[in-house]
Image (cartoon, rainbow, N blue to C red; front, side, top):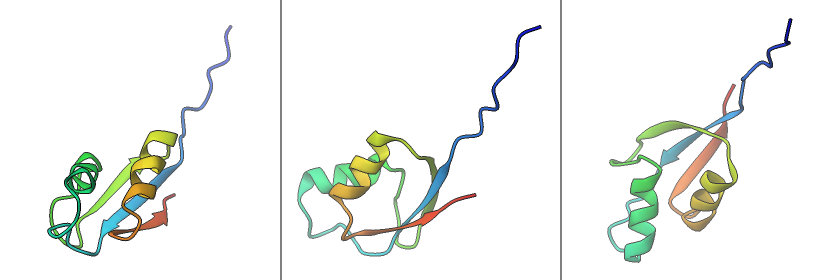
Length: 68
């Protein structure tokens, strides 16, 4: 009988706290790629290198919270 691995992956919560209106176009696209639309919008995303890269690019617009 094969063992099954628990597929519990870590998640992070991302909150948009500053408006991307006066930012570069590619930063606005990055915010949209994270799934954030309005101020104080929160998304729970899988913690992966690609998501971390998007967050790093727009770190001055978002806040992250480690999810459970």
